[in-house]
Amino acid sequence: MTLFRLRALGALRSLTARPAWLVVGSGLLLGIGYAIFRGVAAGVRWLYAYPLVDRLAPTVLQRSLEGLFLMLMAAVLFSVLVASIGILYGSADLELLLAQPTGRARVFGMKVVELFVNAAGLPLLFTLPVLAGVGVALGAGPLYYLVSAVAASALYALPVALGALLALVLVRVAPAGRVREVATAASVSVAALALLGLRALRPEQLFRLGDQDADAFERFLTSFARLDAGWLPPAWAANASWAALDGRVHAGLLVLLATGAAGLGLAGLLAHVAFARGWVRSLDATPVAAPRRRSATPWWERVLVARFGVAGAIIVKDTRVFMRDVQQWSQLIVLAALAGVYFVSLASIPVPTQQFRDVLGAMNIAFVGFIVAGIGLRVAYPSVSFDDGAFWLSQVQPVRKRAIVLAKFLFALPLMLVLALGLGVTAGKVLDASPVLAFGAPLAAGLGALAITALAVGLGAANARFEFTSPNELVMTPGAFAYMALALAYTAIVTVLLARPAWLVISGGGTAAYWSTAEGLAVIAVLTALTVGTVIAALAFGVRQLARTEAGLPGG
Image 1: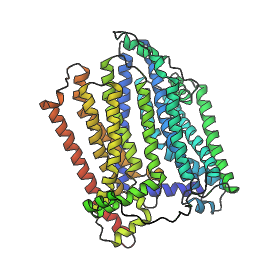
Image 2: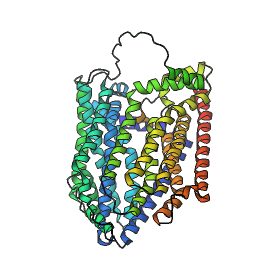
Image 3: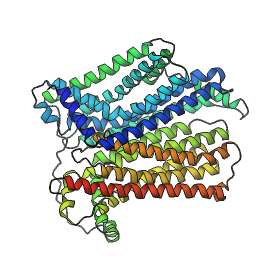
Image 4: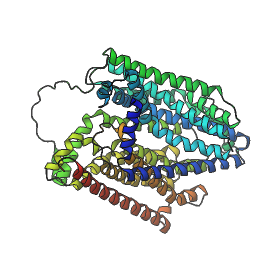
């Protein structure tokens, strides 16, 4: 049996271990993808039919594709470094694979492919429906769909290759046992440099508008269309896709394919050489700590245990593990940095009219939900699986599964609330949205944090995978697919419910007192009922399924 077949069978068995979850998760993701496809197709048709856009529509659409590629490419780059270290050098199955009668080059080639799937799989899944929507709206031929998919894949291979190469440097020069900490510091530094670089470029200079008259919007689009980033890889992918609409193969596609393939090949080759020459430092060795004097139990631990009992003790344990485990808290910093890049970019562009600001504010309600769902996938969803070998303690102790799931929920909720409310409030301040949306955005963010955290913890408990030790491995499991689909479905429902007040604001019919009217109170009541129902159902389901999982474990 070849190594490829062995890995393929292992992945297939992992996916089909719970076929019901595979069907549900895949079905929900397909539904979300179809909704994205239909929304993009309708948006492109509207753009081409809008009178003020006129001849600028093709250029504006092409620049929008470049912006999408750039944002998702940055998302891959910010998270791939820690993932590279875990998959290429710290995987639990690496020693077993290297002991097989097969070449090391093949082993590390498979590891590079695994890294690409884990780091760039989800961004690619969300890119393909967008590209398909553009193609259908513009009547593209078969060549467009092939070229655009290949170009997007090659584009996301670039940050994966860069992360793998940086990981090699870190495992070579970082102190033993501190490689992941150094990798996290490097990821945060990259995010900070991106923010500083963005401010140094001062992109707002490209959008200097005069008086807000009927031509302001058109001047804004003209300035946007002039943003030529042809020297950046996202522009190569957008140009290749655009040329394929006319049946042509653009040189950017060939450059992307050559660069992406060379980068991934070089990453696999150097990883092979690193192991062969013993360059890799220990990833898990912990330096001997200096003797510490025993101190009194901190007050916050006493309060949690006294208030929540067993659940409080679990929260204390998870808090200490979270602060010590770089794989957990690093994901939070990277995603927060990505959101910071987005909002700094948004704040730098003076939007021409209040109506346009409110349109962006309404769109940001959905964006904030998407960001919160991504944070939950990295922070809350793996919380039960992170117990790993220690989970057997709950089998021999009088610990109810309800206490475990509740503790995980209460531990993750403050982190999610702070980030979600911060994003919601910041969006309103940055865009200077109308009072109705300035209240609606934090409301949707706070309720979304409650529901999405419950979905993450509940589905994570229902699909606990104790053989995985990294969130980068868990994100491509059927349970994670189901969680992301349900979280995005919840976000879509909230966005639809808030579409009415958003439309009133945009059309000039909304007032600051909207939320105190009967209609506004009804919207709040429906949102609250939806959120409470989601929280109760998700956590109850997680408790029930976790009990079944425990019954199937040895000694259960």
